[in-house]
Image (cartoon, rainbow, N blue to C red; front, top):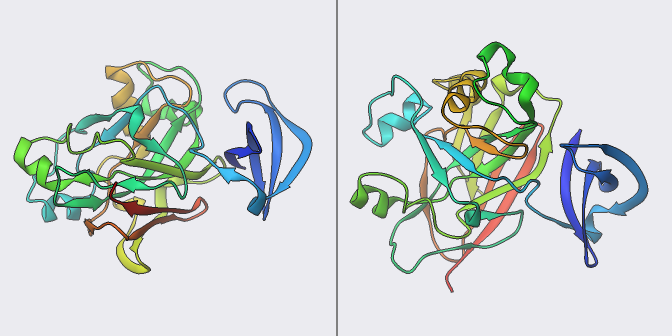
Length: 252
């Protein structure tokens, strides 16, 4: 199932992608979720960020080659950070290039969407608490990250967290191909099997620290190949079985 959140007219609904059609569902994916009778051609709806999390938890270097390209050591345990929910945008929404940065970069990532409230979940049971997976672009002002020595400011600008286009519920996240394209040029390409910390371990470790709520998002780290974005660019994150997340870059 590929769950979407969409707008048609002045109404916002959840639904499920079926080919080039969106089938409207009643309720939410975290409560009662029932198939409805209304169907819409995909081209007649606006896809939104598929979930509205209470928090977005990022994971620091989780691919060895990415740590190497940033000159960082492989961590012994996941490095956690937050992106505020005001960074969240959906498919085709613009990424706004901030005036105080001169180097903004893309970071293609697989993101985990939490299904139900969890705390201190063992890795062996982690899949029970996962609704599904989506694509995420952890946009980062790299010059500010280097200046600050950490990523809070660099990753917190409004529009710096595109996610979508859907939450895929019936996929195995252990060997998915993640790619990033800028203006059609391939920049990043790797498999999730190259992660330092697998999905189940990440959810277990994050839930040791904080209570995760339905809809919360864990961004699982980016592979090597991060690179600059400029106003006028169009960046795309592609992940097997999830689809393509495209966003233009603009300067206001």
